[in-house]
Length: 284
Image (tube, rainbow, N blue to C red; front, side):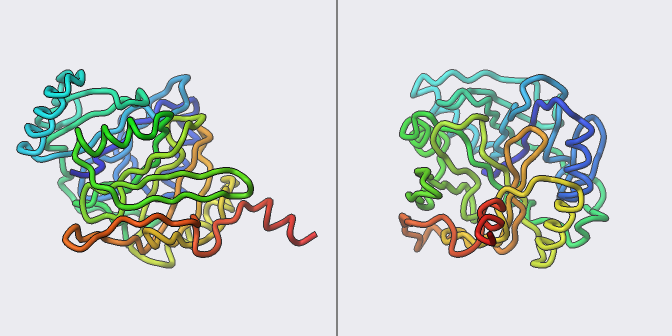
């Protein structure tokens, strides 16, 4: 299983297009779809008023899908079949997670006929068989969401972070679907359906270059450069036109289930990841 694609319903298509192509470094392949690796596309933007996450799609093998559908049916979790040909896949099933997020289980997402090349990030992204990255979803009932993703969809627990950031409580759980440290994290209630999505570059310097591009483009930086203790990602966070965030990073940790033991961390960053206003305030 891997994070297959994300669809967003957004108010400003042109701002999103500029962010995805000129700052993050994805490639426009038409019909509101954007490519970042060997897959034909990974992100789709649709014009609409929600300005939020529309759909999360997880790709499985045919055997994994059959096992997952059996668990869902045994649990009497509603799941319906969708038109797979509309996205170029071979199978496509839809359901809602406990927070109401539109979720798809797909088999056979299409691959591109040519190698991926980004003029902005020429070394490319860590994606392909590890999936397009990770995302942090809203979970008003965190235990219900954790049970759903672990027991029904088959995710494995990576670790937890329980701490406070500038007086705000943080309680996050991280889950993996393959060797990527986490493809999914769950937090508390959020204003949007997600807190952020993450893109992982193949080269260390590409993080700094993306940071510079974001600043030059006037994209609001939400957290400065830093490194997380659990997945070891060196990254920064910035705001999308839809007001949730994206993380751009390098050096994410890989998990081997044979010897992995989940841990609870009491800090969210080993260093850095400061809100810019805090950094500027400290200079006064």
